[in-house]
Amino acid sequence: MSRSVLITGGGRGIGLATARAFADDGEKVAITHRSGSAPPGVLGIHADVTVDGDLERAVEKAEAEHGPIEVLVANAGITADTLLPAMPPERFEEVLATNLTGAYRTVRAAIRGMLLARTGRVVLLSSALAFLGAPGQTNYAASKAGLAGLARSLAWEVGGRGITVNVVAPGIIDTDMTKPLPGPRMADLMRMTPLGRTGTAEEVAAAIRFLASPAASYITGAVLPVGGGLGMGL
Ligand code: NDP
Image (cartoon, rainbow, N blue to C red; front, side, top):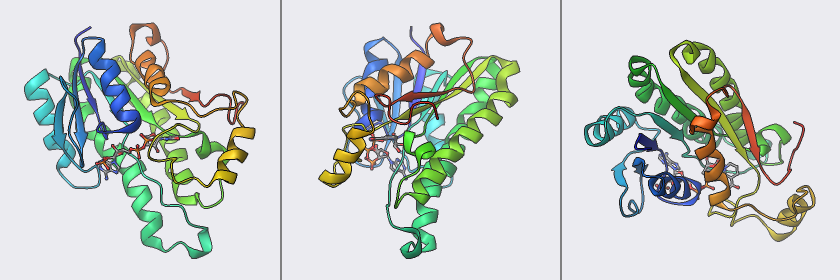
């Protein structure tokens, strides 16, 4: 297929693997990034999901190059772990602003075109830890659990226009985000993961690609775990 795809935070990690997977399929891919650059064959657009107007400009640029956005992946995210009693409000709000409000800004910038086209695929990146909870992650888990509510409400709003909205909830994936996890914490998490290993960014990209594919045409409002069984049943 040759659809216009936009991925936030596509310069590294899961976003980069997703950009590569879509590009390998022949899709026209644009990514937003703050640091680094886009891989060959992918349009790179500087944008910060917490900055007013950045996403609107990114969508405009991607659409000028590739046509109306048909697949949107709200992937940009951060952690800033701290136990709640020691967490100042700005640390809580920074994570909410990036992970939850950032996804809202991303979707808002791109959804009008999809509504007009009466078709589209939206995928939001949540986390298994949103539903399991984790010490030090009240900010992160709140933001990622919020995405499920956002997606499900949006699925109702846009379903009649042929647009699907789904959530991918990765477990522990081998990217920059999980590198700082202390060894004992990682060992605990692997004991909670039936497959007993971390996932790769490519394994998450494969799930995103599936949700954006014709094979997923009757799936909306779903939360798809991609975590080797971490948190299964939640
Ligand atoms: P990385 O830390 O490797 O990458 C994070 C990406 O988000 C980077 O591209 C970064 O851009 C971008 N980003 C962060 N803040 C902003 C911002 N304000 N504006 C624009 N872009 C921003 O993480 P992962 O690839 O692992 O994570 C991708 C998504 O998957 C995140 O939403 C994360 O929460 C989620 N996830 C990851 C898991 C894991 O185990 N790795 C598990 C569950 C969910 P830049 O390079 O410019 O900083």
